[in-house]
Length: 425
Ligand code: EPZ
Image (cartoon, rainbow, N blue to C red; front, side, top):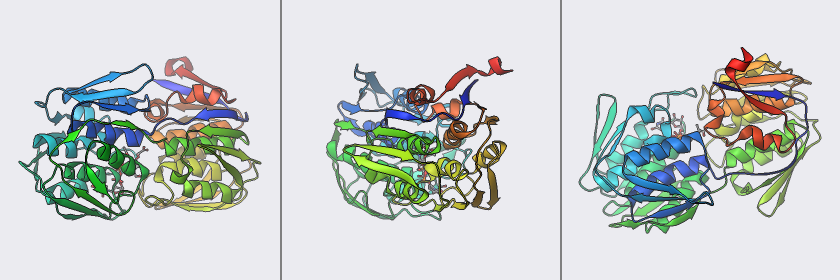
């Protein structure tokens, strides 16, 4: 197992390119299962979760090749295997997004039911409700979801849940509805940019979709889809994480390949606490004078403040001059970083889904344990700001969502080494 050893206190300065979005790429790659003919997809990041998705798609009969420029082609060569097994799904919950495409294209699919994960229970009941509404017969067998339908039929579907809309649920139902007979209207659809990007890819494949990016998506079924060329949107969560890196290190970063319109809630909060965010073409310049004001943050579905940046912003507020409040409304238990940040001297008080943050002058380096992807990113950020050495253990979590994190941060002045755990013992 590997760890990151961070010598804190250096200022980040320079320029970083933000990669294509992991969470846009995963359902888009799954949607390639719907096409007759090859697709060419640009800017898929090189991450562990993407490699798991490739492994699954190859098992499902998709031929995938990588071009010199990093783009990838996807072409379905065989439709005989429609089983996403536990071994792959347990590594990556997002494999659930093959459910809708396989059902619509092959009429039968078996996908292992994803279990909970570090950030909560994460049920998939709304995905199943939506696919049932389209006419699928669904049952559970030996921990697998089995869904069947000779032909799906368009209908009106309400996809809202107790915690708002569902991103991958919307992706599954929207993808399946592209090949349904008739018109489907999804109400309370997720409005996240990743859903919009998927819709754009499906439209390029010949799907008839309108309203994506709003809570009402209309899909008119077509009889077949062809392959298409598509570029994945920039990763707004990676961009937001790097923005906090600039702010927390009292530095200045120019971030290339950023869609600031995807990040308005986060940028608003940065400005509120005293961080400068300047827009320039498709890049932004983020700089900080380090005297940070406290604030309140409540996570919400897009365009509200994203849950995937909650841990990173909590880290920033840990060194603000005053008390802040962070409330998590999407995954109420997504607070594994709280105990670890406390080891670095952050003063955090959790009450249910709310954390009160007593800002401190400084954090002090210590060994900490990464628990999930964004919590790990938060610990790296804390390590950048902390005095002395921070060792983030179980760093594989961060590799699921950030490509070469230490090399990229080192290129703008960080001091981070990747070591084998054994070297530390
Ligand atoms: C996506 O997960 C993202 N994953 C998550 O990113 C992100 O945190 C989440 O959306 C919210 O923005 C990918 O895109 C691969 P949801 P998803 O369904 O779609 C409840 C990261 O760090 N719910 O929108 O699985 C659910 O429990 C990750 O990159 C049901 O109750 O999330 C949650 O409270 C982690 N029943 C809320 O809805 C369902 O059937 C929103 O979850 C589905 C969801």
